[in-house]
Amino acid sequence: MSEFLSVLEQGAKQLEIELSQKQAGQMREHWRMVCDYNQKVNLTAIKEDNLAAEKHYLDSLLLLPYLQYGMHCLDLGSGAGFPGTPLAIAYPQTSWLLLESLQKRCLFLQQAKEALGLDNLEVYCGRAEKAGRDIQCRGKFDLVTARAVASMPVLLEYALPFLKTGGVFVAMKGPSPREEVEQSANALALLGASIIKTEAITLPVSGESRTFVLIKKINETPDKYPRREGMPEKAPL
Image (tube, rainbow, N blue to C red; front, side, top):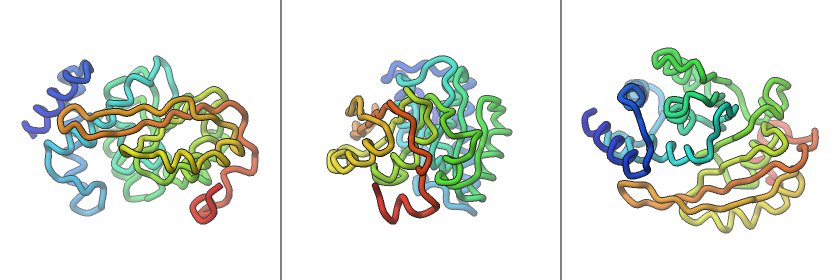
């Protein structure tokens, strides 16, 4: 775990992110919990401490510039808690809802929340199609994030119903999402949103490339979206 902290702290310094000893320790403890739970439930294919520090935690922290004080944020398809958990740790003045459809992963997310004492984080166990119609979730968030969940047209139908008008969805993509972006024009028009920026990002240690696609919700999403479970993937907009 010393290598995990070394890479985390080195990368944070390069990104000009200030992490307290407590915050770095919480991330290390979260990773320890991920490793333990990963032996019985698939949470991540990454096993090495140094790779996890960069490709899970620093990768998540790349979103910090998009956060503002008091934001209510949703992590769509949270999995092991990335990027929501590291961001909840690093910026406690934001609140996070981790949305995950698999019960066993939800159990892990809840255990991690309690073990780490993250009062600004909650877990919602369910599919995006159902949660997007839940009155407690629909139109309630300032920011939605998604990391390696689905293609852009599918992601948009999942994510946009959760946003307030004027809110932003940040799709965390690989180095070349151009084709996905081009395929999203119809979904953007139907769902009431517009791409405001596509930003190339570089991981601080390996230099690997990422792309963040920022989408702003400009109108209310029509009531018929999201469609019933499975439809966004079977028939993308």
